Length: 334
Ligand SMILES: C[S@@+](CC[C@H](N)C(=O)[O-])C[C@H]1O[C@@H](n2cnc3c(N)ncnc32)[C@H](O)[C@@H]1O
Image (cartoon, rainbow, N blue to C red; front, side, top):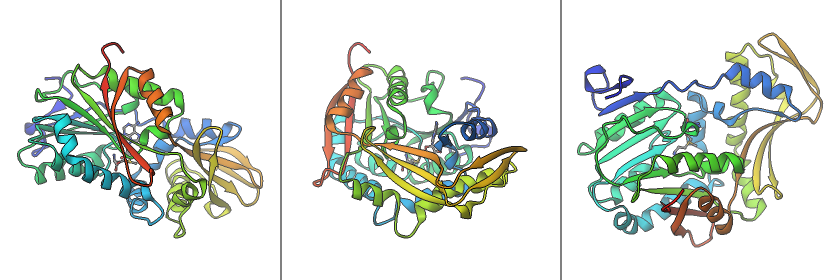
């Protein structure tokens, strides 16, 4: 076993293993300074997910306007028997970006005698707590955790995994947070870790009425605005920043050309601010671009999946075609 993998003797009592790949948590300071030096200014969404950001994201998933989580869960409920047949008994389920490991319960409950669950997240403490809860709830299951950056591929070769079919579960349309090239690289990374017979179950949000999309990212209670502004509070707190969050307004915009919702923070008036001693200016009306969420059609997703060596074996959607789940299998040649 690889020396960075700890098992029961090293304190993760209920986990079969905790593989800490020490993801260089990104260089928050360097990325923020770089992002504020660009035109337009931008911040990387991976930094949303500190403890406060993860908690606010959980609130977003409960909002009436945020159909994504509800719809995906309802589809998972409906297709459980089909998933059980496709995965077969003894599956090894791996979830990149597992977060609070909530949706996975639906999948585990549907499958027939799953052998293992492996959560993978960049946020180590959140990951460990969530996987321990799964281990407690599913005593028969081998539960492990990998603290890693899923954009760097999935390195599973050294792990003491059971032998079953590997199913990579990637819900929440997280693939949509990447630009097309990044999405291809991400899926190609998953594809590389797969053997014949393995599969990916992936959720994608669909192109739809822009008003509905904008409401989902700019809710009436202002929770998404709080999520977006949390990044500014984090910069002020952790990087010695002086940005005035009260002078920034949350905006969600539908970019039809790129088929994506963009989140921005727009300056209500000009402000000068500092981050770690560097000075920056925001003009009145200038925006900081904080997130993209690409939306897919069946054709655009199929073409993405096929371009990196997957066959879309099945797609399921809700009646209103808001959201889809797809079962991908590796084609013979990547
Ligand atoms: C929106 S949550 C999704 C949680 C869960 N999969 C779901 O659909 O409910 C995204 C999760 O991905 C994690 N994450 C974001 N970027 C990551 C990366 N590059 N590598 C690993 N985890 C990442 C975050 O820490 C967060 O827990």
